Image (cartoon, rainbow, N blue to C red; front, side, top):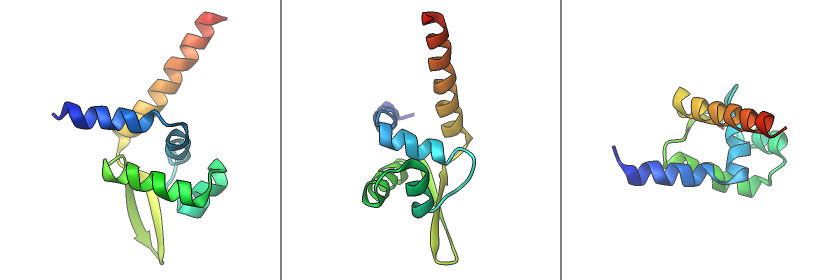
Length: 96
């Protein structure tokens, strides 16, 4: 296990735009245009963020019919995202 790589992944997850992109991929793979439409983040920013996420194996890319489709690398990423959202929801309930 590489603590350095774990830290780099958590650093990546600390960016709101990257989180929006990842959450848009929870249910299905999407191409850049679909991600832009669902997140309202600029195309150049989405492309830049996807490259960063791909380099640390957080997302994978599949090519089909001339398009690149991005998906979460595995169910571990999905679990981290959804568990964190659930955790924040529980904390908000305690505060109310």
